[in-house]
Length: 272
Image (cartoon, rainbow, N blue to C red; front, side, top):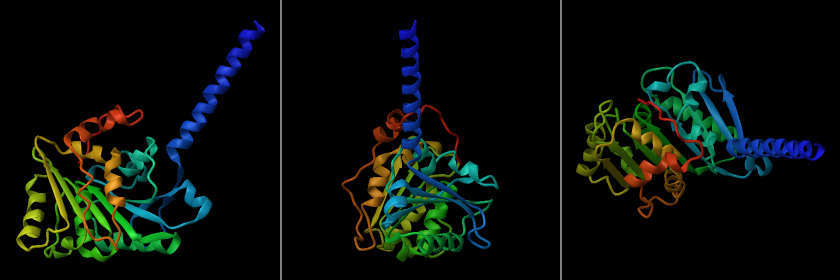
């Protein structure tokens, strides 16, 4: 009887240890909830990796811009999908992550820039390695921001979005990857094609990559936030390395199997 009790205690302790390790692996850093850090600016999450807290060395910065479904006043919504949610699920990203919340309407490039400047002033950001990644409304925000401030961004990826800038010439100054599903009913693929056509017609497509996912709907591109290749491609660039890396490819098979490869990634999410 005593032996059985000891075995039960060992099992319980083992489960507790595994639980603690799992939580540690999933968070791997600290989430800072910033509600009034920037006057008249967006509220945002700022993720600080664990190793930065120890050494305070320079680190890249990823800015994540969400879609319309996460707009509002509840900052927790921003962690329902995207870069922070990927970290919550165990993805290890060696970078700061700045994830603002849009209260509604189009993303404003000047306000995103205010957040970038805040990060640079308060953390040891590697200013040559700032990346922007956004989907849907956040795809528009990504292209509007990097097209306005191309000199500040090392690389960007815009998923199922478009661009509202009249002058899109800035988009040709940095490595840019545009992806869109051909069966997208929320934001038609023509919105991304318009940007690609503009850059091609003006001979500004040397740093451009684009993929039209045949039969892909609007929500499927959310899987890219959980795909390691996404971050590998972004972080392979810097301001001193202004060329697009074609050696990293993202295929339909990568996208289809993303959730299978992530721990506990069994839920489907609706995004717009």
